[in-house]
Image 1 (cartoon, rainbow, N blue to C red):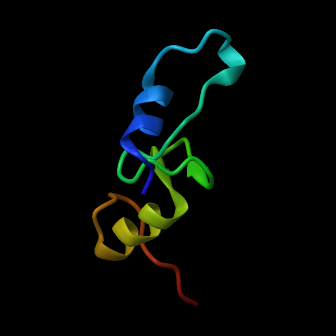
Image 2 (image 1 turned 60 degrees about the vertical axis):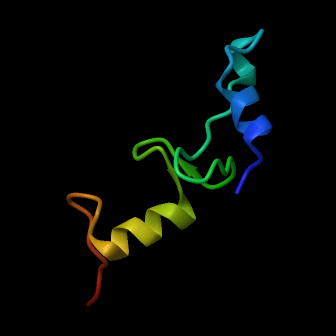
Image 3 (image 1 turned 135 degrees about the vertical axis):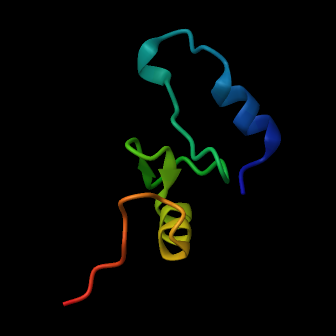
Length: 61
């Protein structure tokens, strides 16, 4: 879980466009971020296993 000060800093408009930091909206993690869902890999897996993300299900074959 990211500190609230770090999350607040990342939400401000950066001076340069290359400094944009995309963070998970649930926990604030910046690494392992999936743009399509706005989640980090850990939160994505948790929500997918619970069936909270429409169209995503655990694969098995």
